[in-house]
Length: 175
Image (spheres, rainbow, N blue to C red):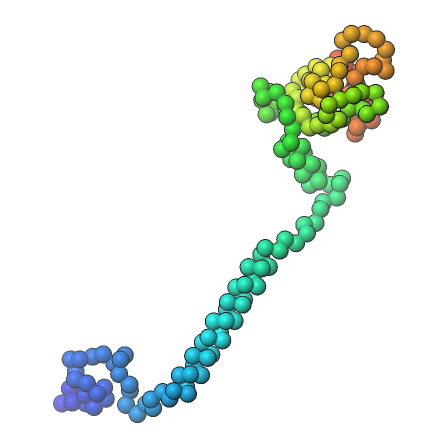
């Protein structure tokens, strides 16, 4: 008797169990108006999702201005040093742990240089005189330090933060 009760409930035999494809007893068939409204709602939500994705993609391409750290802050110093390291040139034989990075400028009034300024690295253990020789070579400035002559004609290294001229025999890392 059990199979006949199931047949009444499910509209099919006990051994053919495919309820997902059948309309339940007592259910009203979907009208064309209901299916049309359902299709309109689905397409509306699909357009809304597409619009949202476009807005997110457009917002991700817009770059907001990044706050710049103050010039005296440690973060600004690190950023400036990293920028200097990216553009600096020098002797590749100098190991990275012994490098000191310097921004070098030639004075416009007293020298004629092919390159008025540049970023270079030098060995920390070199003397100021050797760094001046290499800087003159890098900027393509005529170096008359070894020839004698007046003090005005000699190239000098000026420590900006210390506010002083470095002596020729002094080591760069000490300055």
